[in-house]
Length: 328
Ligand code: DAH
Image 1 (tube, rainbow, N blue to C red):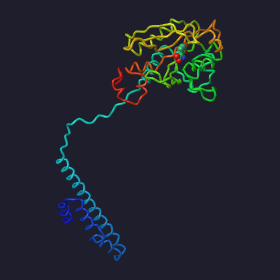
Image 2: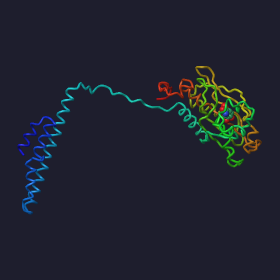
Image 3: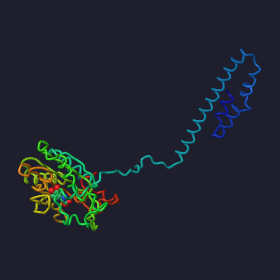
Image 4: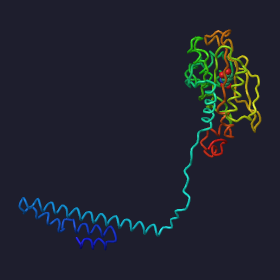
């Protein structure tokens, strides 16, 4: 053993260790010869000597293993000493992700509206003309139905919805005119599709955010209050909002709201009181039941929030998102 220890302490490389190992444990080692000799020993001796040889082998292996870790440590220390490794240098930071502006706007709208008692619901993106148009009193000759605006599927039997107002139709039709289910307050964010001429602020796929409050004695003042509340939630109390008259076939009266931006006033929502005819289409008595609906242009709100245009917020250039106000 002493000789082994001496050899090990002289070893400098892992190659030296391999040589030592084969000398002490290999086929031609003394130890192996002793093991081989066991077969000629008597049974009782064989057991005793066998156990001793096993212990000896374990000891040799242990000494070699220890020497191996020492050499590895020595090599590493030498490398570290030679490398100009400056532990005080700052590390390379990983890129930190953030929510997409559309998601931010949707979450802000939903959390504001939840506080007013609205519940989020979803509708399908592929619709029938009934829910997307007919029930909303958008007649066949109306420009919104024109082939220019709608991506028709299957000979005008189906379409990717042109607005989230289709969710309003679905939800109302599910109530089957049952007044005991009122009031209902729902919101529905989602993707919408139009066969648009594309530019920086008009895309074929964009997002809208629909809201509907139907009950007894729902007033337009509540509609205006709700829109103002949401806009303040998104942009803060200083946001300038103005309302204006608009036309939608399914609301009467219809209004729009603009916000004041660096680019002047931009329209961000269409809304109105659900028209008596549409109320009837949904199976409710317009003399007893009233309601309002609104459809925010989520993509437009998001582009404004991010300080850019719509095309950019749907693009893949992450630099656009770096300086978004209010986003860390
Ligand atoms: N659907 C309209 C649009 O896409 C927005 C809208 C207007 C939604 C009036 C409504 C509404 O629910 O009542 O421009």
